[in-house]
Amino acid sequence: MSLSQIAKTIKGSPTLFLNKKFAILKQKGNPVIHLGGGEPKSKVPMEAVTATIKHLNTREIRYAPVDGIPELKQAIINYTEEFYNRKVASANVMASGGAKQAIMLALQAVVNPGEEVIFPSPYWVSYPEMVRLCGAVPIPAYPKNKSFYPQLKDIEDRISSLTKAVIINSPNNPSGAMYSEEFISDVVQFCEKKDLYLIMDDIYHRLIFDGKKRLNPYDYVKKLDDNSKLIIINGVSKQYAMTGFRIGWAIANNYLIEAMTNMQAHQTSGPSVLTQKGAVGALNGDQSCIESLRDTLENKRNLMMKMLNDLDGVKVTKPDGTFYCFADFSTFNKDSNKLSEHLIDKAQVLTVPGTGFGMDGYLRISFCGTEQDITEGINRIKWALDPNSAGEIIIGNKKYVRDRV
Image (cartoon, rainbow, N blue to C red):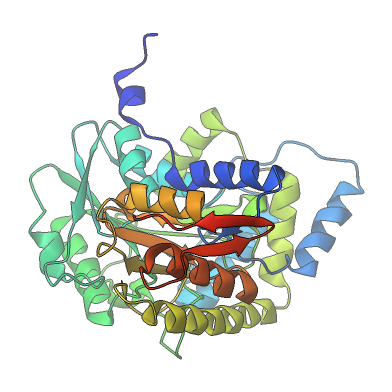
């Protein structure tokens, strides 16, 4: 079959592939534990449900404006003023079918084929593929200090005459690292000086732990006008546990928002009016659900850290936010794909290979599931990898025999 050159370069999402594999195993009755999840298990805010049902009951479920219904745009404007101390106009806001679509549209609006986009490693699995979908070149920046905390020089060293944009995701998926204030300040001012687009993927910005201060990229901008190349991406998926609503947004200069809106008009039209109404309910409603989720996640993070630190051979950095640990399992197997397959096949535990995030030998392990799943899942991993563990284990109603990795 003849495919386009771009189609030939795009790989499937490893996280979505593993979710599918988990669902198949679960459907067959296997006692699998999902430690690869990227969505909280808390309930959607009642205000979101009520707002959705209220509009559904009107039976007037029609096309929505391409850039978002006025109520949602106003809620995003209010959100931006509250959490970014930045008053933006309606022309600076575009709602989309999730933060992922907002990032994709931003890239399509600013990047030409052959140009380069830089992002620190480890990185979210979709960044390289999104860049390739634009016919552009993804350029991972690996921190020279071997940590999850990049410095400006890591970005500077990857700059070329073809560099068009930088993507920053903090707190970071998969590492949970919240980048330093110095780095965020430096990269904002550097991109401004070099006239580069800076896409700030802030989808986890309120899910941070240990009383750390939430950082605001607008604090470090020297000029904010119609030529500003700072793009803020956010959405309701993570902090409101509304992953299925698929509502995200972008904040940028009005020319860029207009271009992104024009492209969205020809791709998907406006997001579903029902899920937009739900997002309005969440953004305008009681915000205690986010603090409750944050507290819950911090406690689960602490549990996972304790258990991983007790597993000889595993190196793990304490996450500052999100709901992921990105642990170094290279002592057991430097090929994270094979290691992840071994754990799902032999221990019935799903983890996500680090290779998709730019760092082989690592596994992304999520702590957004139940405490029972975390405890049993890590215990199964320890059984599968630790040569001093018992040779056999009962998982569900089946006896498993440990193999060498």
